[in-house]
Length: 268
Image (cartoon, rainbow, N blue to C red; front, side, top):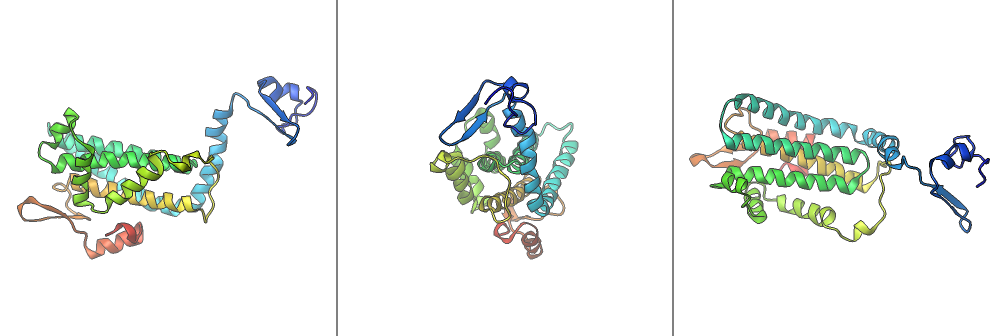
């Protein structure tokens, strides 16, 4: 390209006054007839200009589901805020630890939503898997003798946390394994080119993302109720049994509500 020709970026400026002045990384492939230039603002464009287009496509398709998910999310925030105020001057290390761990799980969930909206499909799933480990830790320190002490000493084994969690949520292992095998651990799919692109209504990965978000916001809500079950008057998921045992036992009305709100695949 000659310096006085119009720039290939479509700006209407001459090459020398546009991309030609920003970078020397201009490549011209004569056989294919293609040319491209890499400018120094590529990352900035990706996270600002390009991301907005992807976000708009996600919101247009998933807006109704996001509102339902947000209602569960808001319920958890309310419980945590109330508990923080009640424990303001308390030295209850277990409850304070639960609050902080659940709060971090919420941060991970928020990040997963943001990654999904921006088109980072695999990275979204990785972040929800991080959230799982935080919630597993909450259940472990609540249910295991000396669990809190072992947590702060760094002596908890992963399979011990998984066992404790599956006692309450038996189907959790399948979901955790799927996220680990398909997204966290590198496999053949990671060798395929995948860049953030706009979503389509019939896209399989979008259906998985919505399903995954619904599952995790329900899990977040349920674990939060479990952590503060003695303080919550209107419980949705758990009942206390003789001897202090706690059982996941949602009523039919709650199951119907869950079916309508997040889908029947998570209500049982």
